[in-house]
Image 1: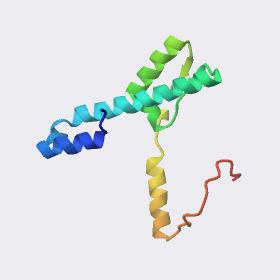
Image 2: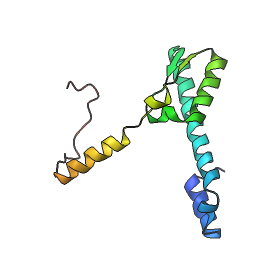
Image 3: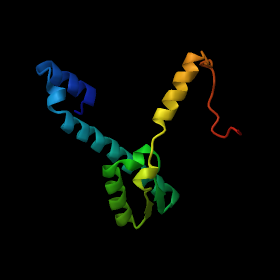
Image 4: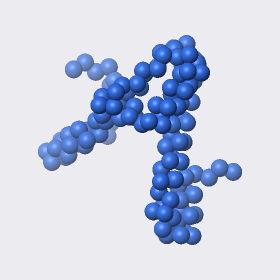
Amino acid sequence: MKTSFLYFLQKEVAKNKDFVSENLNDLCASIQHSIVRVLIAKIRKAAEQTGITSIAIAGGVSANSYLIDQLEELGRKKRWKVFIPKKEYTTDNAAMIGITAYYKYLENDFVGLDIKPDPRLKV
């Protein structure tokens, strides 16, 4: 039976309160491995369903060297063209989104919970 990562952590911390700090590198590597495995599986499935043979990644996730290695390996096996940006172009917008949210919060600039996203909104 598979247990979730959080249940595993709870169980281990109950036995040893320092479990996380003592095993932080291994825990982070395990989470990274799991996330990359899911991303690679989804990329493979999408490419197989669509027939796409050119794959590109972007944003903050494209700076992850483990993801890059796994995607390039899969690309070699599948004979895909894989495009990875240079590290200096792999920035994440989280800081910019965060500071924008902070200033909107200061201005009490909120919308209701009934708002719906529109990915094709013309600006």
